[in-house]
Image (cartoon, rainbow, N blue to C red; front, side, top):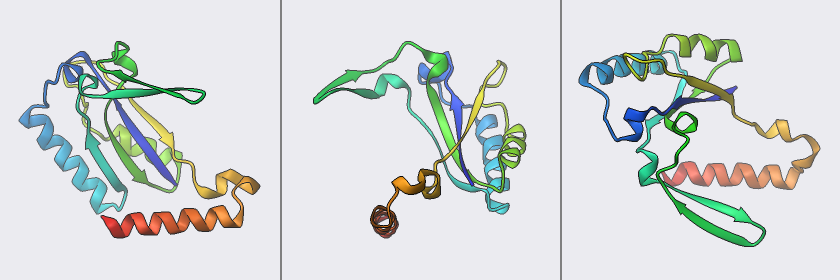
Length: 142
């Protein structure tokens, strides 16, 4: 099972304040634990929404909206992707993480990633084959 672990933004992260050396050191240790356990698939911090854009879809129309975006507590400051055996295991790993926003309350959201089998019959053998082919090509290009 794969899970995306979403680190919620704060006023500081949205202002572009970078983590301290201490937090980077703690996160580095935590990430090493994840790698040694075979849990970490990926993980990155994100620039503030002031450097981002949103593309709004309305029928055939596409509208680009420049950041920053006002709902700070709904924004994402970073993420991990974990490969674990259960939701409970993902929770246990997240509980071991350093507080991403030291000195203040912060929140990390855990969301399971949809796998091919979750689509049921809608994912025909042809679509499944296409998906596998695209994933393989994507891995080769990196």
